[in-house]
Image 1 (cartoon, rainbow, N blue to C red):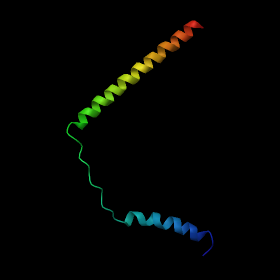
Image 2 (cartoon, one colour):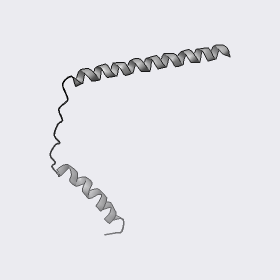
Image 3 (cartoon, rainbow, N blue to C red):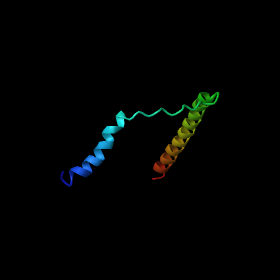
Image 4 (cartoon, rainbow, N blue to C red):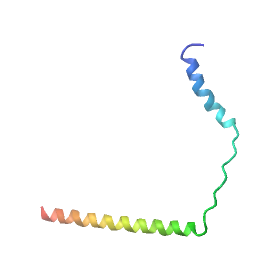
Length: 68
């Protein structure tokens, strides 16, 4: 076996063995009651804050253009 084939085999062999190696799936962590409602609210708040910042930066850019 040549010098290059051995390291290549050492790298590829574990990759090929992976699909055949059976692992147990991790336990599912239950979400707390009302979690899904909170994420919708939180994402709505974040969206609102980002929109407000975007409008503010647009106004500042307009003022800068008017000053020039």
